Structure formats: structure tokens, C-alpha cells
Image (cartoon, rainbow, N blue to C red; front, side, top):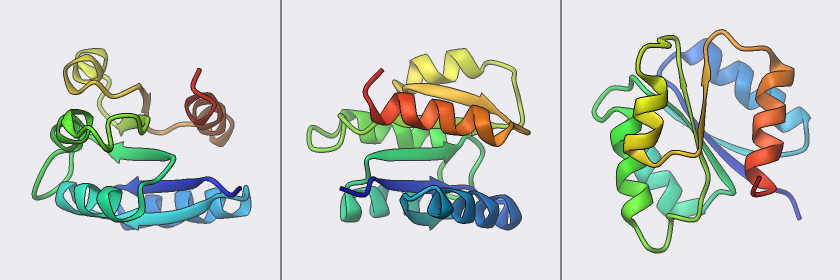
Length: 122
């Protein structure tokens, strides 16, 4: 069964690259550009993983993660936060109950390793 990944980032170039790479790797991919879309799309498609940029318009990614993790039907979905800022990332992950984080820029291998681990439930 093909795994679904939702990627939410407000940088159009990065979003496009991530969607292309993930699709080439065999995942079914969906993209969004703000925190509200992250919530709406997660509810619609129930992905196997959500990759959320921390700093998004309308609602920050860590705030969206908090909402998703409080939803009984969605809290099982792993969330990977991404950000260009390393400051307080461990804190944001803990507060939002996200599962892990990556700091931009990151290597594709690093991203795929995190994705595989999170989808496998590690």
C-alpha cells in the first residue's frame, strides 16, 4: 500500500522539490502552504506522515501540530517539523507533541531516513 505524505511549506520552490522527490520515492504526496491547509488536508486525506514547516502564514506549523495531536482521530499521525531556525526546535517539538524535526537546509538522505523511521513507527 502506497504511503501518503502531506508536506506543508510556504516556500514554493522547496515545496515543489520535496513533492517531486517524495513522489519519485514512491509516496503519494499532497502539498499545502499554510497552517490552516495543514489541518484541512490532514482531516481530508488522513496521511501516514505530515511534514510541517514551523513558520507558516495563517497558523504556524507547531500550532497546527498541537491541534492535530489533540484530535483523537488524527493524533496517531506522525509529524515532522522543519525549520531554518535551530533555536528552540527541541522545545517546539516537545510543546507541539510533534514526533521529530529537521533543520533546513537538509540532505535528502537525512529526510528519507526520518520519514522511513516515522512511518515505521520508530
